[in-house]
Every structure is written in structure tokens, then in C-alpha cells.
Length: 187
Image (cartoon, rainbow, N blue to C red; front, side, top):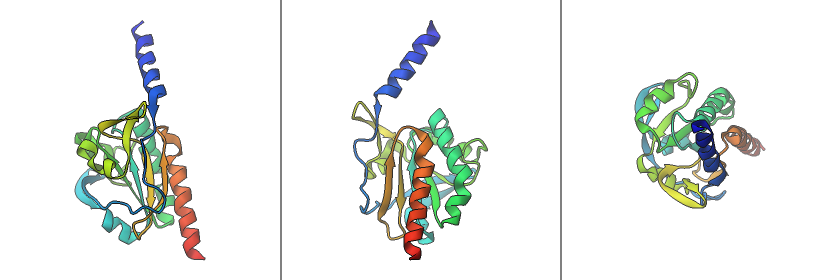
């Protein structure tokens, strides 16, 4: 009986979850930020401005390290990192959830695998700037980041935004946007 109740609660949360209230639109200026981050367990300060000097940045917000959807999403980005690099893009994951475990999450071979950095966003300050809070029944959950992905051009403009609590399509959505941007610049 307890198992049925637990599944029922999880089902209710999945059904009542809704996308973020808003997200930055294509063409918007991406807010600059600096955040404590980890790459393969090593701490550093991630600066969006520095990432943009290298090319487009795929910025993805995720609710919390070590949860099923976030584990899957990090793993999928990790598997596709060579495709992003081949298109000149870098990837950064940002979360407000379980920030004390990000060093471990960044090097975990089943998650990030040390292939891209993840940054801590205590109280979802950065997520708020990007209109990427977690929302349930259309109400923002203070201090939690949603699952929203952005592709930001080197000039700092948003060229793609995708918001969906389902982790499966964020990699394909952002990789396709990066490839389209690269193709448009080659013409």
C-alpha cells in the first residue's frame, strides 16, 4: 500500500508540474553572470562572458543534482559533448538544487563525467534572471530552477530557448540550434 501511495504522489507531481512561467525570448540579451562551478570535481568560477569568447554557450538549468531527470539530462549532454564542441559550442549546467553535491555530480561518470561544468545557483538567483524558475500549477517555486535550456550566441543574444520538464529533448533541441547558427554564420 505504501508503494502505491508513493507512486501516486510522484504521479501527481509530474502531472501538476508545468513549464516555467516565462523564458527569455529569442533575440533577448542574455544576463551575464559569474557562479561557483565544478568541472571534473575541480572548483572554479564560471563566467558567461568568458564562455561567449569561445563561441556559443548552451546554458541549461536543471532542478537538482542526483534526481532521475537531471541525471538523465546530464548524461545525455555528456554523451553529446563532442558534437557540441565540433560546432564550436560549450555547455554549462546550472542548478539551485543540491549544490553541496555538485563537485561529485560533475565528475560522476553516470552524470556529467567531467565533460562539462555545472554551476551552483543558490536560491535560483541566476534562474530568476533567465525566467527559468521551477513552477507547479503555474506558480513559481521560489529558490528552485526549472528545466530550461538556452543557446546564447557569442554576442550575448539568445538564439534558442526550450522549456520542458522532460529531460529527453534538451540535447537535441540545443544541438540543432547550435548547428543551425553555425550554418547561418558559414553563409
